[in-house]
Picture 1 (cartoon, one colour):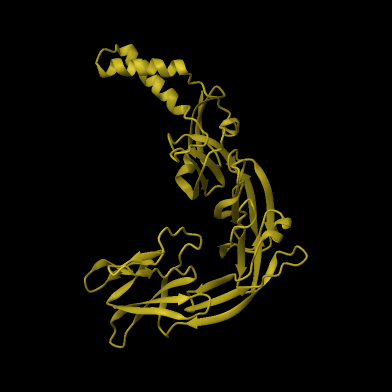
Picture 2 (cartoon, helix red, strand yellow):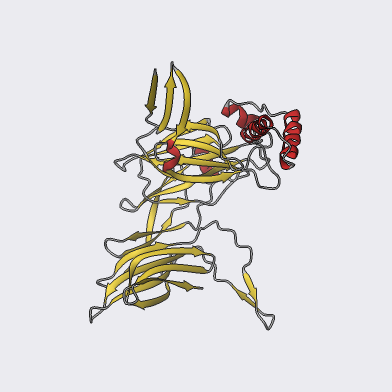
Length: 380
């Protein structure tokens, strides 16, 4: 007899006489977060996690090259052609999973909506290992939490929130084997997440959960002893209240006393948009983006410096004018001081607005009602 089995982790498999005929990981169709990381210096850790050993030998490689040469000359028999395909498939399944100095072979960590973590090989796309983190939670973010400078280990941080949005969970897993290293519950919702500056020799990157209604922030770390490594001076964050059309800026208290990860938030400024304006899009640059060229050399050999402020916020708001004409207003706000840096209005424009904010470039798309088309604008 045969049984088609659908599991809670969205895997589909066919069983025949209690043996698995084939298995499909349908959870890969519901990926919510991905990161690309390097392999370890040795592939033993990844291969041990996958439970598979390398069976493609040097003699298999020689035989495959000979058969490929005969096939290119159209001298291969039908059996040799089948053997060549078998060798190519076997080699694909045994692509090495260790550090590539050229940067071509990497590991993709993909987290699905059902809480299943996949490690995929970028060269052939095969699944190296999987880890079931449990279903029922909303997985908010995933990032490299800690990385050894000598490339001896890597830890991945995963932040999730329950359905009621009252409690969060912080998981730390080994980035090369999927082993669960830490599981910590946090009495704070994960609605607003902010990454903090990397600290320590292992570049520990913690996160901050902000509760603006209670004016409190919770620092997310795997171990409370890591709180002493963090430098929270000059930590600013912002909140966008789209329902009321208000943008607010906050400052975090830098003092961590007694191992308490909960800190007060101080409201520094608030900016309320004009009556009738509705916020339809916001964006801010990646605080940790790499900028390779901060200046531009002009024709007179002078230097023009880029305005690269990571504390810049893009806000788009739609409204209706006095004569009933629609318009879209763009604001650039400094989230530290609340100062309005720039504003521009597009007539006969409407949302939705899609934005890309990188370095000193802002590219955004909106709908032109008069022209009945999508339009794009660029701010530099």
